[in-house]
Length: 276
Ligand code: SF4
Ligand code: SF4
Image (cartoon, rainbow, N blue to C red):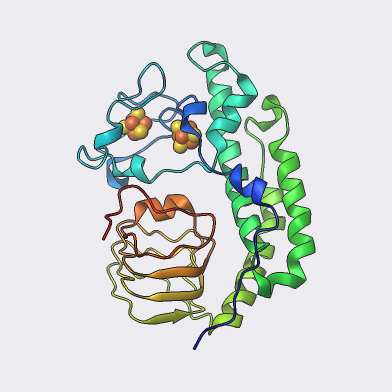
């Protein structure tokens, strides 16, 4: 039996569009500002604020076409939600040309990453029909989020976001709870590493759950909360994800899937997924 729709059309398509990465308009911030570790899908450890050895002078990646083969799976998954090009726009001059601004540029990038992630989740919550009583408050936080992201570079560097998060997080939680309740039980799965899920998963709460190498192959996920779930190597082949929420492109990129995987609006099939 068909279930009622849980989403309305995105009322802010331009804002969602601004959260898509545009690496050609960026100064390779993720390859420089961020640290990474062997344990997280990289072949070596790298401290923050230093360029990756594969970063070319024009900010392209030397091994872009061989990331998986050479053990850079973490790079293949990464998605800054548009924070990179937004930081680059603020400076107009990259950190190599203007080394005195390098550390500030990296801090601005990190702040924008967090604000863009908050923006993504707010835009998601604003599409959830069971969250309608919260839409006005969510819109208020979306405006505040944009105001913060629109601050000058000097104010963005090292910006304290805990007060903003303490306003946003309870709203997102309530939006999620309403949606899971409308879809099913809100049953919590706190750890699904390597687990095989089957059939319909209605209203389940996988928020922040480790789901590494779990299999959702062929499952239908309806009203399912995936906020911050670790989907590295999870199998989403032939799964219907149109009913999930708080899923990001980065989580999807880290998972496995195929062209038959059905996605919620705003997300796209990662290029490395096999076609069937
Ligand atoms: S920071 Fe974002 S836009 Fe820049 S290269 Fe990395 S993923 Fe692309
Ligand atoms: S391997 Fe390529 S994508 Fe990954 S951090 Fe290095 S330059 Fe960036």
